[in-house]
Length: 456
Image (cartoon, rainbow, N blue to C red; front, side):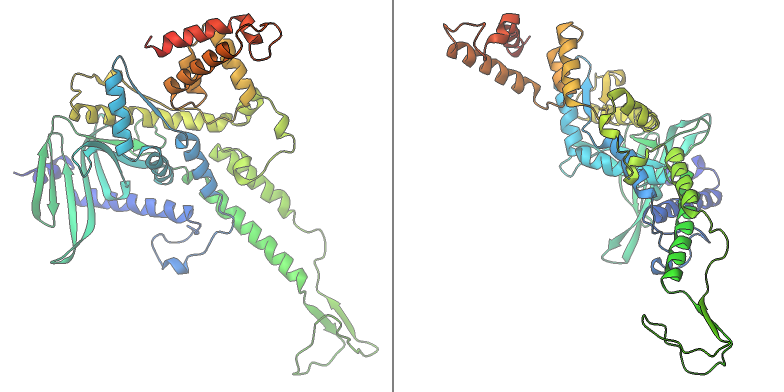
């Protein structure tokens, strides 16, 4: 029996499996439709795109985009414990995999669908790389006792074919090998000692095999907001051109002119007036504000994502900013908890394929930087305090401040210090502006930097 037959045994009843796959893919299509700004009310998967109703107030896009941006907009760092060469190779693998641009695109995809597939594979030149795959063309099989463990994976998609026009291609990833089919023809196979794939969840719940989309919790709220806003627009349109009521007149077939400046000649008992609202108008603005706040609360994305900025936001402290973005920080940390182990596992497999077979999985670390807005001066002051108290190294703090080439920057600092020392020879240190700081041991700082740049 070939791998395809074994795969059918692993997945149980193929018919029921296909039905579940179809339902999941239709749900993915529903989320994507909502993200693109179309209504999802009504029967799913019916009608053409141009027949779908557009959502004018599409809050789903900023929610998904900001959530993904906080998670993946800043470059991530890789570190292999005790192995600088392997760390450099990890960065090279990540660059070949598309680096942070691909991570951001994949995070948006995962935020929409709730799931994503990651595969440790090779690029066109045969070098190890990580590839992210759309979950709508993938069917996973999980361990029955642990849904976090992926045991098999099928990837199926249509591709152009010179002979048949379009052919279905399938990749059957099992525990010990992969077979690729073009139609019913086996075209390639490979063997491995462990499944080189990971099912990445946007947000997970214990005992649930698939992830939770960022779109699902706010779908009904966005639809309701757009419904109310459309009603408010119709009210404005009505009062911009209200209906005129005539009484005491005989109806004629001629149309009534209602443009500005029109004069009506009415009989003595005739009357003309606008049909207006009687009584109190519904408080639509209050309800719209309520729904908008609910969207921010349920999505855990602050209102600033929708362009709402408090007039006093420029004066709040760093602690207040963390409180304001607290729900979004918590949401980002949950994403990191799901993505981190998957990325480390895929990178570990790529490093093994690159020749670092002795590197244990526990030594592979991915670091996610914080996207919280900070006061630059306050951050530098805190970093200087930690360095002075010997709680952190200069290299660490420079990396935290976003310096990409830390060693190069340290060498430039040392060179500037030496130039200042040569230029200020014989000058009173207490009065010269360029060297007054050396009274407080800045010269010692230059010596330490020199020793660091020399390889300490």
